Structure formats: structure tokens, C-alpha cells
Amino acid sequence: MYPLTIGLAIENRDLWEQAQSCLADLPFRIIVEHQDIGDLSNFLDRLERMRPDVVLIDISGWKEPLEGLVTSIRGAIGDPMIIALNTSAEAQTILSSLRAGVNEYLFPPLQESLKKALEKRSAERSRRRDGAKGAGKSFAFLSAKGGCGATTIVCHVAQELGRQNQKVLLTDLDLDAGMVGFITKTKAVYSILDAVNNLHRLDISYWKALVSNGIPGVEIVAAPLALASKQQPKDDQVRHVLAFARPHYDWTLVDLGRGLSRLAMAALEEIDEVCLVTTLEVPALHQSKQIVQTLLDSGYGKARIRLVLNRAPKRLDITPGELEKMLGIPIFAMVPNDYPELYETYAEGRMLNHGSDLGKQIAKLAVKLAGLEDEKAGKKKFGLFG
Image (cartoon, rainbow, N blue to C red; front, side, top):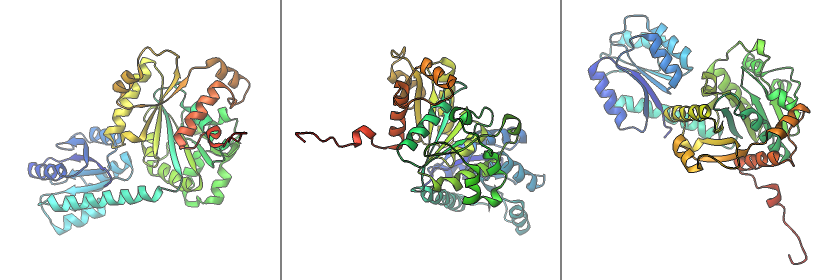
């Protein structure tokens, strides 16, 4: 059963108790809990930050047009399941609620009807997730804070997977910085916004016109120019583009920039796993802990979060075990600090050499992420004595 996350605002005591009783028996997590909608802007802010899959709203005392409330909720978090709860079952109220855009209208007793509605939604999400399996794997790369190096790592992971004869898509969803094009020296005419703004004509022919070939085996969709990136795509637009692209590649790698933005949270709904890239700087560790907790609270499974410690010194001031205990997840990989090599690489306008120490370490990370056999280990050795 897909682990739904729930947001609710229920003022009526009887509806509240019945809803809580039902949810207590289901494997779903309440992440937004209000006893009334109260200050609508505050409620919407919490919904946008936590992004629940399902929103339960008590409309028994709601006096404003329901269309406005439903539109505001969908504007904040895309396309959640909205369930209206009421104390009565008047036909006109039910009809007007459905016309306003709610998915379900429920009234007491709630135990069975609410359970059925939530299980139906859970099954739909499970089918959607299962349908994506086998259609290419996807990873997002996210810096805990600016300067942690997620973009450098994702570009070189893409390069290594391409070198291993994998078909790779590298997508830049960092609309603030957008450094993928710079690192890969890709001269992109189009950006991710062109895909978002042309969903009505998005097919494989149009897609091929959007992508650039900056690295062997890797197709790249760049971020827009800084002046053009003021447009913020809607959640469902981002998910649509990622869902479209994924089946056409072995690996879809997405640079999400830094921090958990609304855009990043939307993208993560279509992505298998996220690589959280951090360093040993105190602000970076602080942000990492907050990001991990937010992801877990949003229903993003711990097994889907890969912690990558970048610029790791040869001697750590903190043991890996202490670091893992602090952040709540295991360290997936450590990438050593080699600033001189990286500086020289960028100064010369190229990417890391595969044979460099840092290049080798990121190549190992790519192989580990993808579950591919290391090239050297995969080659059978022949000798005089077998």
C-alpha cells in the first residue's frame, strides 16, 4: 500500500474524532493538522511546505464559496486528493461540492467511507509507481546548501554512466543558478521551460529538438538563462515532463540545485531516489538534517535518500557513525577534497579526467549508484595459469 501523507483541517468535534479513529488504523501519516482552517494563508503555507497527498477539509461551517478554497489548495500543492467532510448529506450540497472540484464528499459514519476513499487513492499511487518501474531509473542530486557540489557530482556521474554505454538524460532544474551547461560546455538553444511551456506538443520528435549532446552518451536539458528563469513551472508541469522523458533513457539524472524548494519537492514525486550532497561545514550539516527530516515527514522513504559527503578530508573530525546518528541516515559515499584538480579543470574549460583521483572516486560513486559492475572487475583476466 502506498504510504499516503495527510493534511487536515477539521473543526467539528464529531468529524474530527471519526477521522482520527479511521486514520489510526491505516498506515498513513498526518503531516498537517489543524482543528480549523482559520487563517487561510497560514493553512495554505503549511500545505505548500509539507505537500500532503490527501487534504481533508471540514466544510460544515465554511461560509465562503467552496470553489475558491479548492482552487487555493490546488494552487498551493498541485493535485492532491481533496475530501470534503460534512455533518449532513444534502443532495444540493454534495453536487455543489463536487462541482467545486473536491474528489470525495463524505459524511458520518466516516469509518468505512473514508477508509475506502484513502485505500483507493493509495492503490492509484501504487499503480503509478509500479508502472514506472522498468522504464528507466531516476536520481535527483540536491545540495544541502549552496556550494556543496551537487552540480559537479551529477555532471560527472552522468559522464561516467555515458562512458559505460548507458543512455543518460541530464536535466538541470536549478532555475536559480543552472550550472550544468557551464560545466558540460553545452551550447543549449532550448531549456526545461520550453518543455514545460509546450506540453501540448510534447512528443519524442519535439523532445529530440530540445536536448543537447554535450557529453558522449548523455543528452542534456539545460536550465534557462537567468533572466528567463523568473517563470516558476507548476508542480504538475514538472512531473509531466519528467514522466514523459524517463522511459526513453536508462538513467534520468536531475540537478535540483540547493535546498528543498517547492519545485524540488514536486520533482521528487517522479524520481526514484535523491542524492543529498553535503560537506562537513556546520551550516551544511544543519541544512542536511532539516532536509532529511522534511523528506521523511513528507513520506519520502529513508531508503530513497542517499547521503553523499563531498570534499571529505583524509581525517574526519567526526566519525562516520556519529555523523550518521546526527543526520538520521547512513553515509552512502564520501568524495575526497581535491580543490586544485577541480580548479584546474574548470580553468581549462573541461571536465575531470577519468584517470584523475577525483574522477576515479566520482566514477566509483556512479557505478555504485547505478548498480553497475566496475569496468575493471567486469573484465575477465586471462593468464598462463587461468
